[in-house]
Each structure stands twice: as structure tokens, then as C-alpha cells.
Image 1 (tube, rainbow, N blue to C red):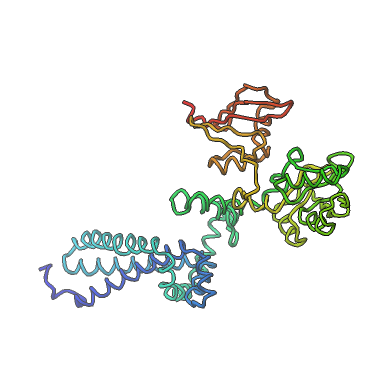
Image 2: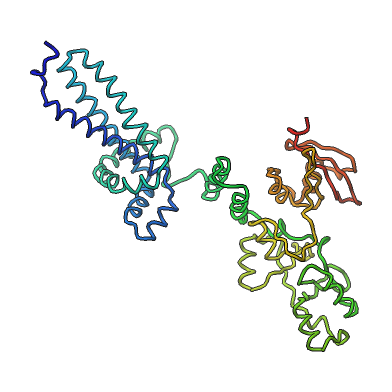
Amino acid sequence: MHGSTSNFPVNPWIAGGILLLSIILSALFAGAETALTATSKARMHAKESAGDRRATIVNKLIDARERMISAMLLGNNLVNIAASAFATSVLVSISGENGVIYATFIMTAMIVVFAEVMPKTIAINYPDQSSLFLARFTAFFVAIFGPVLFAVEIVVRGVLRLFGLKLGKNISLLSAHEELRGQVDFLHKEGSVNKKDRDMLGGLLDLRDLNVSDVMVHRTKMRIIDADLPPQSIVREVLSSPYTRMPLWRDRPDNIIGLLHAKDLLRALDAYSGDVSKLNMEELALTAWFVPDTTSLPDQLKAFLKRKTHFAIVVDEYGEVMGMVTLEDILEEIVGDINDEHDTSVSGVRPQADGSVTVDGSVPIRDLNRAMDWDLPDDEATTIAGLVIHEAQIIPDSGQTFNFYNFRFQVLRKTRNRITSLKVMPMDKDK
């Protein structure tokens, strides 16, 4: 009789224990692979710095990710194959040839549910906790399987080399900045990171790709003072300005001879008991600092901190003044517009009820993208007017309309050769 237990080669309790142990080991291998792949290396480094020894093990496993994954796959396959073979042997001894069918369905269901889906679901939802819990278990089997994995790695690399694929050590297709940017964008789409935080992190990552020419105030917008004006007029200019630092020029506007600080002016007025006529503006002015327009923002930020100053004049390769850059301009690339109680300028971006946006031509493309959550390219032009001119290949007239990058651009006003106002409408809303 096939169903008799007299022919059963192993005690049923022992057989059940072996199968249960196999399922548990398979679940641990699967969960460890998923958890250690999904865990946050930054958080593990923080825990390691706090003295968590398990985090130290996790970081070592992550650094040898390829070997760790191979060890977990090897252990998982060994356990699953052994468990299936044992279950088949037991069920055949009980049910005869039909035991093969029973073993196939039973082990498939148990492995899929309890050794794959369930542990991986837990690991992907709690990657840090799972990684710490399984750290020593994983490290033990990585060490045990080390020689086998080394041989497997050599075989795999050799086979891939036959197909023209070379695996470099720790090579990533994306740079660390690109990986971080992609992760932030992904979390924003999922709702875990709000737009403000995403823009701030994005601005910080973008600093290395920007030069001072991308964020400077253009010379046509600079507030500067003629050094040959009477002292009373210069004082009035300083008082009417929303800024504390004012460049002084002589003979022509792009000949900057110094930088007048409002606080130095007040000290001098106090020293002369308010007698403006005694003031010598050139003596009060600080030496102007000139920087190339190709200076990267990280380098300029370091230079500001080193020199303990907040203001620089930007010049091109010929030494001609292009504009000015301040520490605030760089910080605004990270945190957005910084407006204080004396700021009088507006952003120049005015959303309309029909979904369009009226934009001043001098508005930087980056500022418009940040304000409207758009992705207009800023590789070839800095301002929105510059983008239209670059794409149209002409200086358009008022009323002309252009379509590119899935947006419609209408020139509202033009002064001489400058576009001063545009209407921008996303094409999907213009229907």
C-alpha cells in the first residue's frame, strides 16, 4: 500500500523540520538580497558613525555588492533545490510516482509565497531594519561561499567577455550626482519629497554645472553711481537704492573704480557730523573685485567665503564688464528667491488665468522653470528672451509667435533689439 508510513524513510517530524528549515533559510537569503540592495548607504554610514557594529557589516557588504548578491543567490538556489529534492523523495516514498507531481505543486507554492514574495515584501518596505537584522547572517555565508563565488565570478566575466561585455570594478553608468538627482525626482513624483525641497536639492546639485555668467545681474540692470557726481547726489543715490553696495564708475559706465558700501558712508557722515560736502567718495570706496564670467559657482562660493566678501564684478575674456554677482545670487540658486524688506524688484513671472504666463524677457530660464515646474532647456541661453532668439534664429518683432519644446511663445513687447515681454503657453493647455 503506497500510503503506508511503514516505508517512510524518515520520521515525519524530522522531514517536516528539514523542510521548514529550508524554507526559512531560503526566505532569509531572498530577504537579505533585497534588503541590502535597497538599503540607504547614507543612513548606514550614519548608524556606523553612531557605533552600530551591524551597520559596519552592512556597509562592507554593500561595498562588495556583486559578491554579496552572488552569495545570496547561490545559497537560495542550493536550499531551494535541496528542499525540493528532499520533498520529492519523501512524497514519492509515500504516494509513489504521483509524489513528484505533489512535490512540484507543494514546493512551488511554499517557495513562491513564503521564501520569495513574503520576505522580499518585508525587505523592500523595511530595508534598513532588515539589513541590520540579517547583516551577520549574510556576512557569514558570503565568507563561507567565498571560494566558490570567486570561481563563479571568473566564469561569468569570461563568458561576458566572449560577447564583448567588460565589467569594470564598481563602475556605475550614472554619476553620483545623477543618481541622487534621479532619486530625488522619483521621490517627488511619489509624493515623499515636496516641490520646494526637490528644487532646493536640485539647485545644490546643479551648482557645479553653472558659471557666474548664469546667475549674475546683467550690466544693463546694475545700479551704479557716477563717481564725479556731487557728494549730496551720491548720498541720495545710495539712500534710494535697495542695495548696500554700489559700484562707482568714472568716464564710462563699464569703468568701475570702486565699491561704495552704505555702512562706510554712514560712518563717514557721522565722523564729519553730517557734513556731506567733506566726503571723498573715492577714499571711502572699497577696491572692486573682478572675476571671470567662466568661474564655476562652487569656486565662486569658496572665493566669497575665503575673501569674506559678498560682491564681485563679472568680466569677459576681454576684461569688459558683463555684470555683477553676489553671494545672495548663488544662494538663491539653492533656496530660491530671497526677498527682504528693501527689495523692490519683482520676479517678472506673472501666471494668467488661461494657463499662460507673462514673462519679462530678462527672466532667467532656470527661475522660470523653478517657478512653473517646467523643463525648458538652458544650455544655449540664459534668459527666456535669449532662448526665443536662439531658437527663432532672428530677433523677432512684437506679435510674432513661435512653437518649440511643446510651448508657444508670443512676443508682447520689444525695445530696440531687446525682447522685454513674452507670453508663454504650454501647448497642452492651448487646445
